[in-house]
Image 1 (cartoon, rainbow, N blue to C red):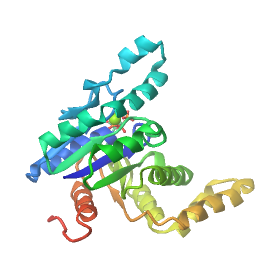
Image 2: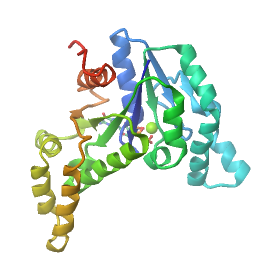
Image 3: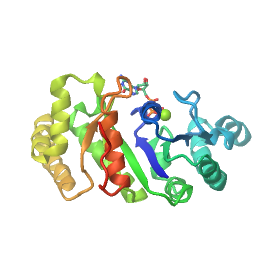
Image 4: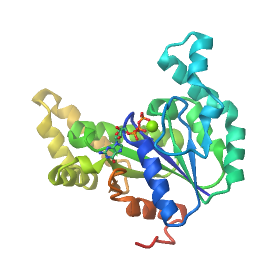
Length: 254
Ligand SMILES: Nc1nc2c(ncn2[C@@H]2O[C@H](COP(=O)(O)OP(=O)(O)OP(=O)(O)O)[C@@H](O)[C@H]2O)c(=O)[nH]1
Ligand SMILES: [Mg+2]
């Protein structure tokens, strides 16, 4: 069994990508199980095989504890940890080869509270990968791109599983912007130049230092342009996942 967690900032396209990747793998006649770990989601663009909302209800928590929507979401995400054995059993009973896991809308609920890393650790002992979504329209600004990468580093320090980077919603970018963002990921000198160009003089030293900070971090392997809407990039993403899961021994066809 292989587990792929979709992780990214709010609205980065996690749920849509969960649906699109599952559909792609099913078409390739792979066994797929979809898990929804987001207790706050109202409608999912897929039919979850395993759903935390069976165990935890944000509405009930809001009523019972008199919390606002954000407080209730925090509590709900933590409470999911209490049901991790049930969730693990459900996933094991289904016994699919690929388990695609949609995570809570707010990345910080999943990555920065104790419950998220605990859930990732306890959900299975099988190989895992974090699919980190870099929101394409948001990342067209070089400083936003840098902050998204830092966020992914923070996720890595918490979860310590291999990360595959996806430039999500790439259908929303024009060709130039798309190439520029992909170029930044490959070449931090280019990123530095564009960051410097986008800040005022007094922030220049800070801008240089933050890009320099990225140079020492070697978790950035490749950034795969993907659209859940058009299906672009799904074969590349699937091949990248296979490489992680098989330690590079096997490369998926087409
Ligand atoms: N054009 C385009 N829009 C997308 C794509 N993926 C997602 N969207 C849109 O982006 C918005 C957010 O998508 P979701 O999949 O719900 O993102 P999410 O990360 O699950 O969002 P939260 O769980 O609410 O944080 C929706 O309006 C989607 O229709 C894509 O590949 N292309
Ligand atoms: Mg979602």
